[in-house]
Length: 188
Image (cartoon, rainbow, N blue to C red; front, side, top):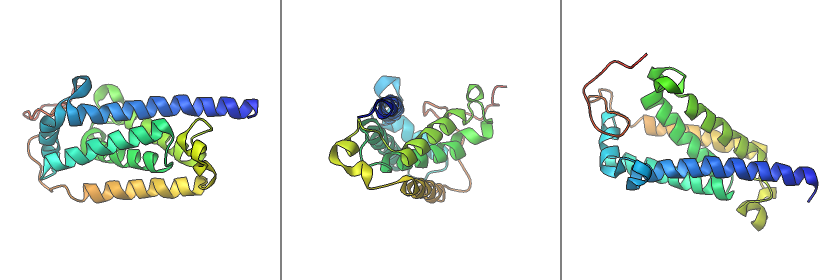
């Protein structure tokens, strides 16, 4: 392996580990209550507050998608599937929770979701590097950047399909940890 390829692959490994680990942990918080997370019951109630009739079912699906996409990204397996799955949950999160709060994260906005999505796009289109399951199995040579773009479009399409399942009128909003609360103004 040439020196440039080595350092490129090392950078991709670090980025994949950070992104994939973070997203998988996020899913574990929702599904199992790991890392101080709310667990599936509270997460299900939160999803109901967002307009999803069967909140627990959607919470399980979102949590499983985060866990799976995080693992696929971290291990560099089946690219671009993991990044596309990540984009789908980020797009739903932006539309249902973060967009009304503006861009910046300190106000509850969608800044971090955009960063996750952009890193997912980079991985989907540029590959996983030599230190990946795909490379080990020879799968990294089969798909190029165009396939990554199509996969990301598929992830966005999945998000639109999920969002179409929301009820038009929504129950009282919920806090980030899943506890239903009375409507309160967003802090400045």
